[in-house]
Length: 163
Image 1 (tube, helix red, strand yellow):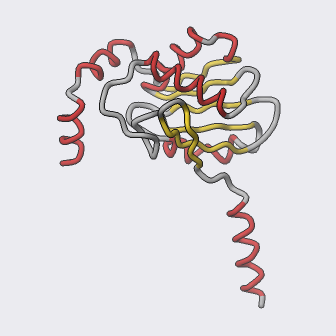
Image 2 (spheres, one colour; image 1 turned 120 degrees about the horizontal axis):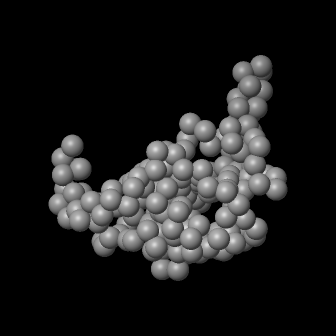
């Protein structure tokens, strides 16, 4: 009987955690999670080809103090796959559209890693009224972005698959 109650408690506590959801943003399906509450909204942007799971080590902890949104950009995680290169401007527009679809009003604290920091800087320049603060972790430079854009996407995916 005791084990039964422990299993029920475990099931209830794990069901309280956020679960990935999908939302239509324009022509794309975007994977996201939102957890926590409060006046502050943290918006997490992963680096490079990473999805929202890159934030797993700190996501739940941050949600104890604020509303936290993490997502996978188009082409990453379980979001819609892409066949072309997206610019940082494209990604910033997608991030803005996602926040609009989710009904996020007010400014967000945009926390970004690596290439995501380039997206966040572009977002802040395009939508200054949507940004309360930026936190850039190991930000890539614009030169890094030029290198990424010069990649042969099909060949790169094949080489990554081999690894």
